[in-house]
Image (cartoon, rainbow, N blue to C red; front, side, top):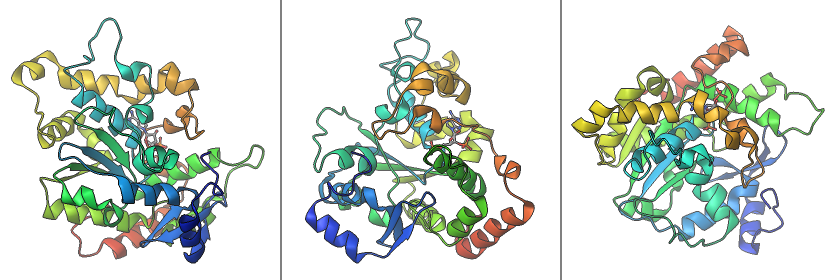
Length: 322
Ligand code: A3P
């Protein structure tokens, strides 16, 4: 179901055939829509989401480029928002994160909900509804901008994001075909050709929105989260209007959430070791190393400098350094 383009509606197929296209890293098709490269198989989900999603003022959308640490922040946001209902100290171990993958608890709009159905019924989601998306800022459904809903954007260093994406796409290769040549992927990445790319335009859209509307868009960095997670979880709670009370802080609520959402705990949960996504991806693919600077193990200094050079040029004047 996930990979089928032939289930697309006729208007979507017509649009797709009119758009520029490119091969992605595993030779599936990408299409250039509204200035970004979308997987062609997802175009119907993107359109359905743009046409039908009605944001509520209390909604929270987690946005990221693929491989920026979305799974981690999904878990943190879920634990944070549901902390009154599910304690991370529950001795009965009833916390949903112990038995469900973060992607099932916090679904993506265009690549889960609106991919599976043209206009899904979202009535079962309790307020505040928590969803995720990889959509660029300029392609968000109109109602997101019109409502008071909040956006949390997670950004990650492009070199680590690139290497994480390369590893992930290798999993999608037919067995026995080996790894995709890294230099070939690097060329495409530096040309902006990757899922939801160009990477820099994706980041810049949200960075600008966050500077202009800090009460609506929170811009977070994976590396900063790794370095000082306590500070950033509290920042997140403040931004979302659910700050930790003195009592919670004294009782270690922040630490409890971080422990439960840590790489070591999440990656060893049975559901995350052996479960599968509705998309067919294996849950374990979302937990690889979770380290900062892992790119040095796969790329030469020159390759790293090439990404740095592109970012410097593209981010010039934005005030953002990655
Ligand atoms: P690596 O491939 O560098 O290890 P996404 O969730 O956006 O698909 O991003 C996946 C990346 O986040 C992977 O990076 C993965 O290992 C890392 N990740 C997953 N869970 C994490 C956690 N709990 N803490 C830190 N990083 C995590």
